[in-house]
View 1 (tube, one colour):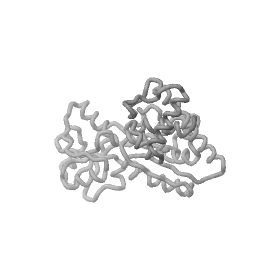
View 2 (cartoon, rainbow, N blue to C red):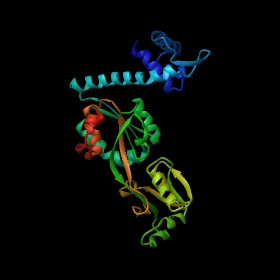
View 3 (cartoon, rainbow, N blue to C red):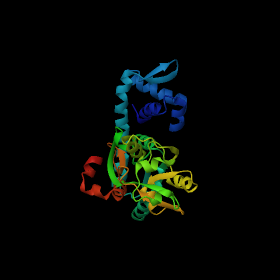
View 4 (cartoon, one colour):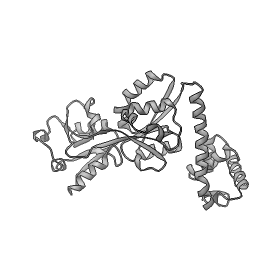
Length: 305
C-alpha cells in the first residue's frame, strides 16, 4: 500500500470516476492510475469500484466504507507535512483563501494588507466562487480557508466560526421617489423592480425570507454575484438595488443613495471555515483571528487542531 494508490482512488471519486481526468490531475497516465487502483484492490482483497467492462462507474459497498479511511489517511499525511513546516522554523508558505466576490472586494483587502506586513514570506491565493464551491475547495484541501455568508455551516467535514454580522441596504438613484419616505417598507420595495444577488449569495436567503413572511412576491428583474454590477444597473434606472452594507459604505457609485434596511431584513453572519481535523499553521490561525478577533476568547485552538 502506498500514497499514490490512495491518491488515485480518492481522485477517481472526485473526478466522477473519469480515470483520464484523474491521470491529468495526478500528472500520470491513465493506465498507471488503473494499475494503482487494481494493486490496492488486490492487496485488500476487495473491489473498491464498480465497473462496466473496463470503465469505472461507481463505488462498491466495501468501497464506500474504504473511502472515509483513505480520506483520513491522506489528510493526516498532509497534516504531517504542515507540522514539519511549522516546527522547522520556516515562516514561508502559501495561504489559499476561497471566498465570494463581496468578501474579496470589500472585506479582505485591509485584512490581507495587515497580514502581509506580518508574514511577508507567505504567498496568498484568492479564489472566488459560490459558497457551494468554496465548501468543496476547503473539503478537498484545494483551499485552506473558506469565507462566505451562505452555506458553510451546513457542510459535514467543515468546522466553521462566525466572523461578523452585517446588514443589507437599499440602493437607489438620488432622484428616486423612495427618498421621500421616512421609513421604507417591504411593500414599498415590492412596488418597484428589484436588483439583487443570485440565489445562495451574500445573504440572498434573508431577502427572500423577509418577503415570503409578508406573503409578498417581489419583482426581481435582475440578479448578479457582484455588488458593483448591481449598482451599475441601478444607476441605469433598471430597478431598486439591495446590496451588502459593506459594498455601499465606501464604494457607493456616484449618483446613488443607500437607505438603511436593518428593519426589513434579518442580519447576516459571515463565517470562516476550515477542514475538520486539518492542522493549521500558525500564520493560518493568525489570518483567521484577524478576520474574527472575537475567536480569541473562544476555544478556537482546541476546535481547529
